[in-house]
Length: 279
Image 1 (cartoon, one colour):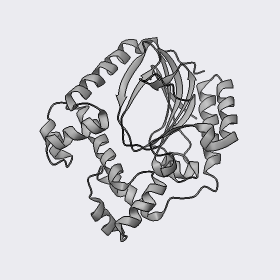
Image 2 (spheres, one colour):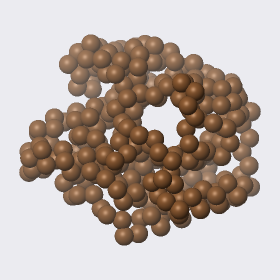
Image 3 (cartoon, helix red, strand yellow):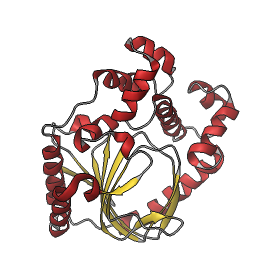
Image 4 (cartoon, helix red, strand yellow):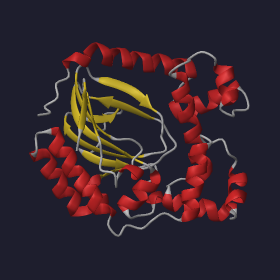
């Protein structure tokens, strides 16, 4: 696996067979700086995190498992990362997770579970081997080999859900679910039932997450034109956008941008302190 290095982060180019299942390439975080805390909005992805050093937890003091999988959910989470933290971060599309995990995704919706509880002894053996291999490249290769094995004979999502997911992504969640069902030639109830199995949440909830993710990408470039941003993303008005920020980010749009800038500034100041052991 080719590995691209930047300060504090490694991005690995995954095998071609895996890429359609991934939301993005794997990331290795190797953070050596002050402890960080932030509010993490929910995303339309399934996360696998394999911790190697330090802790990641919630602000109520509860540490997350060393290796865990998080299903889709609709609530923001207050996250704390220790001053020294290393982990492999895998982001799967919901349909990719459906194939790799082999279980209905509503069973892990809104939950964080130890990875070995979901994937069994094969996952436990892989985690042990990952810890025994110091070079990042070897760890990423081992992880990819495990994921490729999980793909074998895995159930495929329903064609209806695959088309629905594609349309939701194309429209950044702005298509109405009734219209989506009509386009697919199925009832709204059937779509919702199959969607919960293959994605984990109802299509309306997932559409909301995708639209909010589109807003977050947009405000990286323009953080102040809230009324225009609301209009551009299909919200009724700015008050509607503000409600989504309160529900999904736990704060107002302006305060969310301020918190994001604070975390980014802290990371920028300490970036040079991060050391990666890539041979």
